[in-house]
Image (cartoon, rainbow, N blue to C red; front, side, top):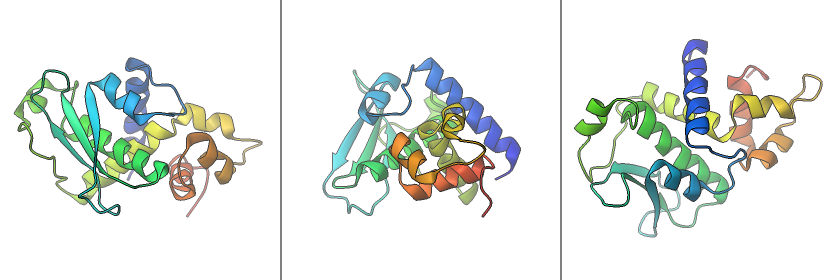
Length: 172
C-alpha cells in the first residue's frame, strides 16, 4: 500500500479515536464497539481459526454486530475486531457516508470485494490498535523494541512488526 493511503488511514483512525474517546492502549474492545453503537458476539460454532464477520443490524439498541470465533486469544480477537471496524468505516462507510451506510443490507454479513480492501482494513486495524502518536512514544533513540510495543498495545509481535514497518521504522 502506498504512503498516501497509509497516511489517510492514520488520519481517519486518529479522528475515530478522538470522536469516540477511545483510550489507548485499548484494554476492552467490547467497550470500544459499544461506544460506536455496536455489539460483539462470540460464536462457538465457528472454528477458532475462522475470521470475524460484521453486519448492519436493524435493532433498537445496536447498529451493527461483529461476530468472532469463541476461544481465540485476546491478541487475535482484538485484531479481528479491529479489522471488522475497518470494514465498518472504510467500506460500509458507517457515520461517514449515510447513502452508502443506508444501502447496506440488514443482517447480511459484509464481504470484502478484493485484496486491496483487505490490505486497507488490516492497515486500519493496526492504526486503531497502535496509533502513530502513541507508537512514537515508545521509540527510544530511534529504536523500536517490538517486544515492548506488543506488550504495551496488547498485540502479537507480528502485528507490532507490521505496524513498525508501515510507519517506516523497519524495513522488510
